[in-house]
Image 1: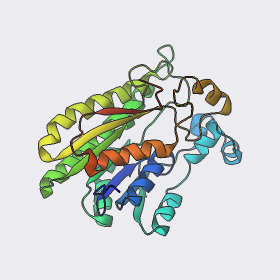
Image 2: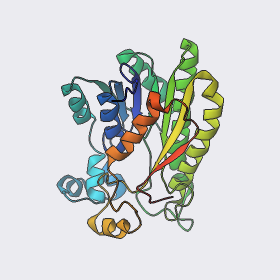
Image 3: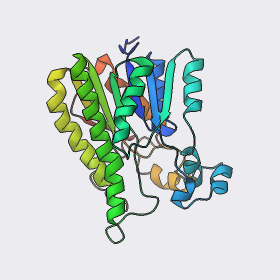
Image 4: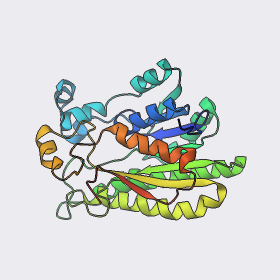
Length: 277
């Protein structure tokens, strides 16, 4: 049995109320970490889905996915706490840079200095985002959340780490296996490509401090949005012949935070069942 070295470590997970973020929070807590989750509830109406349609959705598709986005982190916290773990949460909009300092203050007040930062929160346009229909607003929103917030989160993490004389740290960013080419969602893909570039450069800068910085790039993961029809179309493109589950990504994130990954940094690991090789 491996000892991940995560017992007592403090982890801050963004976008942790559903999907990959929620699975990551549960997985890190199961390894003994104290987990602070931040999230932002989003209205289905912002994505062209009525509240009623989202609430009544039972089968995978955009209505169900957007219903999941309306959830708090209460269910995740309850699962962790009922298993004897430690977890707390705060709803915050990372689009506002001023939020980031308050977020770290709250995490430290709950559990102490943050050892592990998981940048999972992201924005993706509710419609096709192509060069024929993109806008300044779309570009700015993707980069504000996916890039600017992630980088400022790392900067705040590193600032506090240096002030306290930290000797062990982990940062994991969540990208996509389509970061290099994502026709139809050009700003989302480009923002994730930027995250990967920041991952590599930051890893070089903070390595001497004892911090590793890596990214995971998920393939098609069933977080509620992939319909049965789309799934059947995707399976032939995935060598392992199944969609990913949030736990598949969470396990690799947990590995990258563990002592077993102590000499892994500056890497982007595709976790996609072979969807992108």
